[in-house]
Image 1 (cartoon, rainbow over the protein chains, first blue to last red):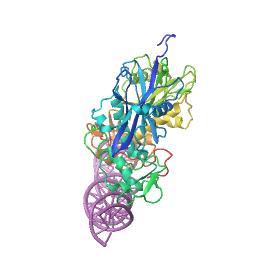
Image 2 (image 1 turned 180 degrees about the vertical axis):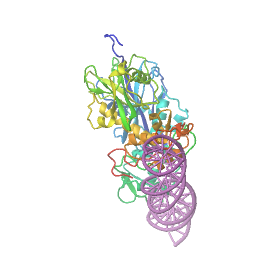
Image 3 (image 1 turned 60 degrees about the horizontal axis):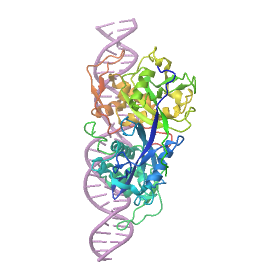
Image 4 (image 1 turned 90 degrees about the horizontal axis):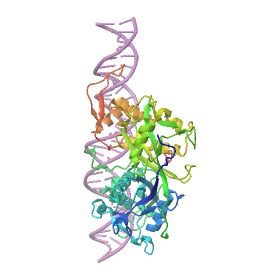
Length: 243
Length: 243
DNA sequence: GTACCTTTTTGTCGAGTCGACAAGAATAGG
DNA sequence: CCTATTCTTGTCGACTCGACAAAAAGGTAC
């Protein structure tokens, strides 16, 4: 098959980050503006090459999260997928391991760091291609958002969008913003409170300005939700009608 | 941050394959016996390095599927995840993109090819560590099997385990084998036939030896199942009780 | 041909869940 | 004290699920 002198090719390995958060009831994504070729001036996902031969992939993702976004405490970070089409980077063969990160609401990206060039962008604007992205980053964003939408159904991921203590209304707003669907408060309460371990009470009610004070909760130990939260709208456009 | 002479490291990239099928009502996995160091003689997942600098990752997976397993028509092939811990391969830094493949019941691995060294192994034996694997392949298998179990719930993946036309009993056996749970035939029928586009009728009933002939179906166009098939047992051991 | 065996397919009933809508409870502001 | 606002709970009909049972449709032995 191979002669004895054959050696496998060596590839440049990068990590890219889809960082999601909620701002003003809408789902946002952190983008940086590229300062070097290719795609100078174009918006792109935070990311970069492995620092050295021995750096772990997940560690590289955390390092980029810190260096490019100024984020250190990440409630949720997982691998999303690996993108390695031969021509995705005009500089040559680059394989990128994309990650999905979810953080609670935060102030503006920390200035005075590499993150100065970063800004939160509504996900809708990206998916509708009103904000063009570098490389194949649009596809990565689409798959990251879909992963988040799906994980809201059968895991407790929604709490990663919330501060340490939160109200059920805030949690509901997470679902509504990520799914893009309004939910009935009564049914949402029933579902969440019927799922033992999803959220746990955290102290006395807290006034949220006007109206009746809301009970506060923190994230529970439950990782998988059975039965799942159900969004009525189909996952993807494909697949025919509903039900 | 970096001086101008810094160059990112170049990494060896491999693909590994978790190939699942059903044999005799049990879930099986294709393993090869390693012929070279490291881990000579140990069972391992089929896989190998990228052939050249320009080979696409998914193409490499399909090539290994053909070369090492003798399989060309693959009903289902998807990326599973990327494993790149610095010390997973004693030869040096190797990053592996694992894939999950599902094929219908097949005869023994085709002899006379590289696949001669391949054999179907019950997944239970691997997960229970009765069959030790090379590298971190046990973890990859565990995540592949869990992915398959999960996808049975909300996608039509089960049909990938079946021949082109199949009976609903055969489909039910797929669920039972992969999930390791018995299912009630009445409820399974109701659920499958209530999910439009999951399966479509394919010709007149076919006798299966003894007993009433069964109606036959083929895979339908539906990719996502709403509402999902529900397995009562929790996804992982973690997460507390059921419900 | 008839009785029996096996396997597929359907009936049904009670318990539980979901969607929809409405009402009650608790606070701030005037 | 009255009202606007927000959180929380009640309730009802439709639907779904789990469990069990029975009917349907062949094959096979005698």
